[in-house]
Length: 422
Image (cartoon, rainbow, N blue to C red; front, side):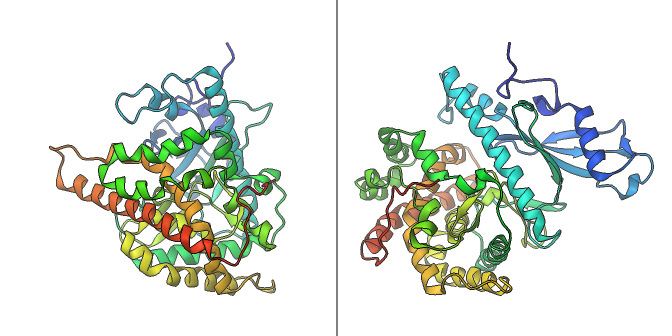
């Protein structure tokens, strides 16, 4: 039988990555003769948060010369379908991919490998900006998937001590969102100073890819089926349902810069709450993680996505201008000698144009995450409170799709929604 990343193996966290190979890669990267001790261990820290990889927190238990100077714990992220395989075998509403054919699994495997390689390419690119300058974890080493390496794509990076993921069920305050906006603006400015050599980053079209793998009928049902997830979303879905065919196959977020003639910046593409680490004590932003959807585009795309995930509907509506300004100020103050590519007013216009496209992309996540967050009668107050927060965020975004659609009908920019990406 041909081995694949859709099958469990005897490596770390059921992957094909063996301890010996990992140790060899890491000791080489750290340039050390020290070795892992008998108390080395791994725990799964990705469970339920990401479906394109296995993510392990490794306790190294170093022994030998210079052991005390080495990182005690590191994160090892391995491209794997195991999380999706588990999901396909689960019971209940959250079960997806049940009855998936071998062809479908082949496509999933291809997409996961592509996503892993995009993340490797992103780290290659941002490493040029200088260590410790940005809120991105330090990478120790990475291995792409290739024709020769079909099973063990991996990235090893620093573990952010005393950090935790942001949570979709919490409301975050304006100061935290401003920190994120500044981190994004600063990073986007640096991304304009270096040439991108990765073909994948240059041609990636997260939005067009999504449409290519989805029929119109399935696209529409992703949203209309949210009525079953939560009946309180019905009015908002009724109002936007008629617009769905117009947005199907849109490539706008990945192509707007080309259409309007602006130099692009690097965009994370999946800036949701669970992909940002905050400090356990202060709540300050520590790291932007998960760069598997990186592409070129306009920086407010990431700002839109995190505001959908992190802010209550009222807070998001009230603070959008302030946050765009915060991002823009950080962006231009970090450009150095580069010319300023667009004005603040233009960036606000881009925000409006991108809003419904990014909002629809956000809404595709709801069907996956909401059922698991929905409380039963016997669940505690905490779970109920978090779910109420999520419903408020979701209905606000769905309502605003219509609001911004109408606003954009009056826009002076003529934008082709099906503009070819690559």
